[in-house]
View 1 (tube, rainbow, N blue to C red):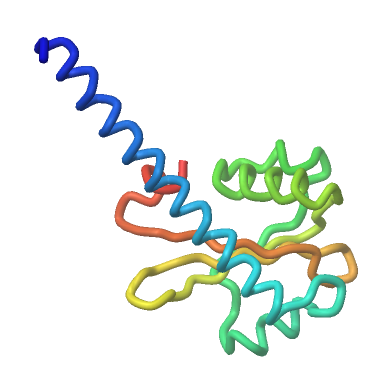
View 2 (tube, helix red, strand yellow):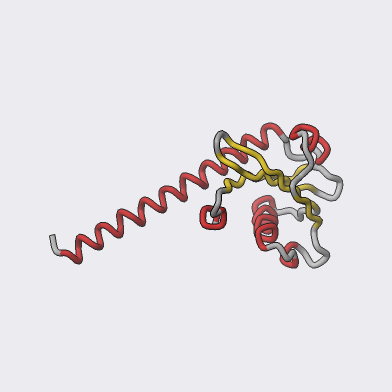
Length: 136
C-alpha cells in the first residue's frame, strides 16, 4: 500500500473513532437526561422538589436576563440555556446547576424552570479536568 494511502486510512480510522466517542457521550447524556425526567417530571416537579430531593442547594442559579439568555455573560450558562430553549421551544425563566457524581465520574445536573418554579426541562453534563474539551 502506498504511504499516502496508509496515512489516509489511519486518519479515517482516528476520525471515525473520535466521532464514535462523541456519539457515545451524547447518547449517554441523553439517557441520563431521560432518567432525570423520570425522577423529576416536567410540569410537576418544582425547584423546591429538586432541592429537597438532592438535599443541598444548587451550585449556581440564574434568572433570565431582560435581553434573553444571549445577554448572559457566562458562556456555558448562555449556551446551555439557549440549547434547552430550542429543545423545548419555550422560554426558560430560571435555571439551576447542581454538582453531582455519576458512578466514578463528576457531573452537573441542569434544571430549567418557568416563572412559577415548575420544571420545564433538565440536562446532564459530564465534567472532568478539561470539561470544555469533552463537551464542546
